[in-house]
Image 1 (cartoon, rainbow, N blue to C red):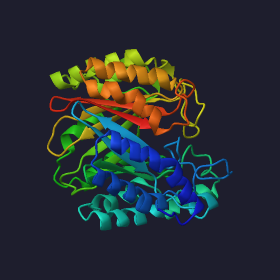
Image 2: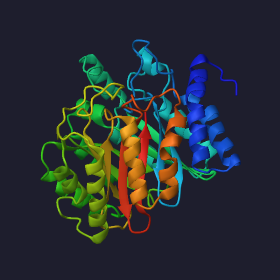
Image 3: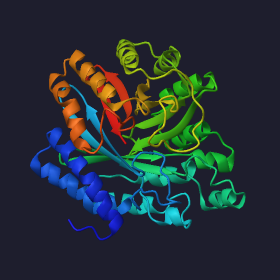
Length: 395
């Protein structure tokens, strides 16, 4: 490939080798590897904006790490799959012409729709003004000089799950700036937006359970963003993301079970496995402060809060929890050894044998003995059908 700009060249040179190796290690066919690398180079890189450097004034995506790009890897006992998350970005987000980076999302979604006609944009059009800032709200914050003080101005992020030759698209809405402009809590914005599109009431029961739990949760627990699958609204899954700033297992257990509202065998089996994960990772406990910026290299292990998503599906009465454990600040070699041991204990022998070696090959310039921010997050969920489901997010 011959990228048309220096920024695109830097994105390709720095990130395509890692993506290619992840696809190879996850046993995508040669044809599938080519298809996904072509997608990355031809369609995603042009939507990433300036390559992150030390240049002053560059737009900062909420993802942290690699700026508006994040690779992650999902594992079940049977297989590994690869995921690409990115915030569609242009230079205008850094020059001040598009301070909340709102202009590129339309182009990104239209491009993906052309590539994959099954991508359904109804929910995007129905939710975008409910969960992100409008022109008027952006102008209001700018006129009061309150925009630059926001920890992040990210409005939307896209995630592509690469499934064989196909891909599925998830859309994430970040209402933090809209909350600042309107004074409406993020939780209220999220619940209202979902109810607005839920004509048939298919999400009513699990949504009410989550809302009831949050109404009695401590002040350290708060909704921070929401996502949906870009499929027909009647088939989508919504995920409400909840941050917990009191980092300890008591809070993990409370949110995982929604304060005891979820007590079925599946939930409790997952909680038991999560307890073992928590105990093995050595994440410092304590109260976290609200972030003033996205995470970056050198951040300590006591900086980042816990994260959860509570997934609701049409006509399912119970939400399904997933926990995200922050790994930033913990030595990467220690994390790799821990994950290898976890895979061994779960009987995932093939994954356990290859994890550390594969990790070292993704970014050969990173010394795992010294780095503390390559493996940034570990997420965990559990179901009777798939068993444990673990994801590592790389920065």
